[in-house]
Length: 486
Image (cartoon, rainbow, N blue to C red; front, side, top):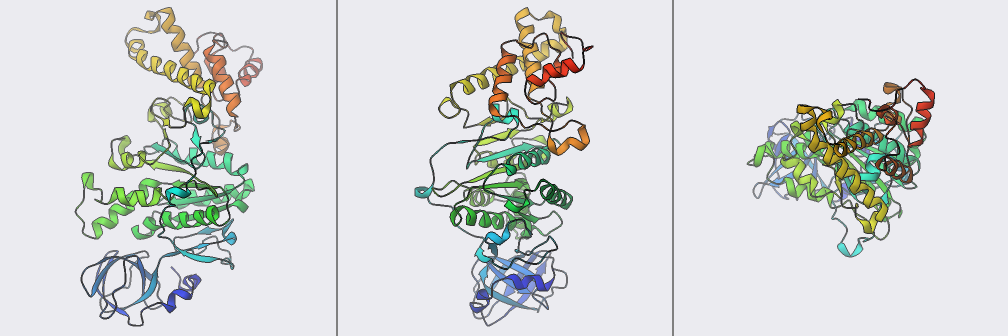
């Protein structure tokens, strides 16, 4: 971390700083013990060490009347016992203001897009309380994404929290990128992307894609990458939320907050907990995981002035959905989109498992009777097909009753219709991306359930947008055979 960038921090915090410096008494990796003889800094206070104050430490525990233990948010190379430590007198702060738009920041509010730092910004502490219940909005509205399977079966809530769950390599980041592409363009509010412990390659690609799409002027990006110390990854989510709260509360704008990946936040907390010497809980997770996750998630809320809608990718270790990290995250969300490795292996992208995914918005009072009825029919058809798969595998399709064969044909056509070519993967698949309105998606599902396409080959429904494209696809391939086509 270069010293000049740290000058971005407001001079006000220096005024409250203790005049008596502390002394480093121990350094163990990222954990630093400091002695203060006169004034003990409170929890969450930032301390600066090193020749130019380039090593930044956050106080996490007061060990006794004279010693504090902190976690370094920057690498600790060169830090040694006996070195002086300066108390800044305040917590970690994040920049807020209109000047943040179209820029890229790290956890300290330093710009990382190789441009000059924004001039007109205020600084706010990243540790803030969630909005009071009295200020929260109680309206329930649907948030359209343009992705068929999500809008029909797992509708997202405006001002809600949606999670994209999946193991390694099933398409969480691709789905998140597609949602950014579809929503940032026609979302009037501000979009904030927070990369927690993810690859710097993905951040660079996202920046380039957003610039080309022309949506960067309404976007802010904050990154704490996987090569950074755990303290930095642990606090970057709080910094992004502080920026989001400014746009919601001061500018009265709707905010789309995209986080990739919440599991890395929990993982950073686990690393810090181990370094601080806390006794681990189940599967090695930190004993304070529930509190830490709640402290972050509860700040994402609708108020009477604006809404923060959050979409979060959640890595599921070893595809085990009973893992404590996944279980704790599930409890905070209004919609859970579960990605399945089996569907990905069958080429059904987006690889969303419609039977495991759920949304609290999928009720007749919110989505309407027709949408609710269609979603239930689709789930029932797909569930019946899942039950029949074992029989088909052992005895073959011919041994099923005619009624069951109709169910299987309907389910397979629905599965293929619910695939969709993505704008973000055009260069890999050769299919141009599609954005499908909810009305068109529901219309297509209804027509398949009514057996209107039973004479069309399944392949005609694969990787299309609206249902009418299936007929155009057939006209373009007159030699395509009709009937069952596996």
